[in-house]
Length: 113
Length: 113
Image (cartoon, each protein chain N blue to C red):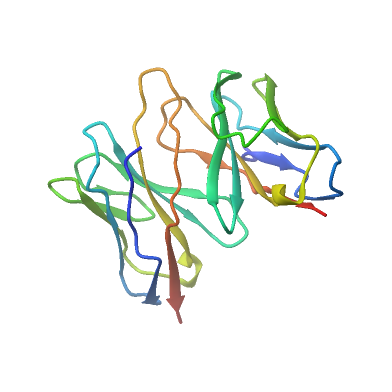
């Protein structure tokens, strides 16, 4: 699987937007970009995914660079409950197989009141 | 749906004992994954099943670990004999095949003393 690089930690103020970067310079054409987050003492939770176009859902937005070598997860208004480790994961799914996720070390997001 | 259900939530056992972790995936999900999380190694994929069949067990650390999925609604991860280095949080996740979203359980915190 292609590797991703994320900052170890980031801080944000409550109710401000947060931009979490991810570099994936060796991404292949079939790799989707996934974001998961893990709140303290919980299992990982799906946030969003995309392939080439920017994506929005109720939790966040995903901005993908035109060359797909980087992406940014955007939380529009951070809350204290958004404090978590955020993982950027690349995954492709050969026909008929399940989608395996290889987690890196992620970015620890701290939200300040 | 109650989500992915893991039991027990906490397990403390003595070195050399057999440990069995249990997982009930979300009904209708064809894929099931077992992960292990430690501070040193982060989240590691141990094994995944598709339609109850083990597809990739290359992440299973050694022969002391075994996993089964006798039917679509139940899976076990067994460690025999257990060792202190097996202490970790073990997560089970399920997903519809080729879906981009995996659903994780709350995990089992295993302590081997």
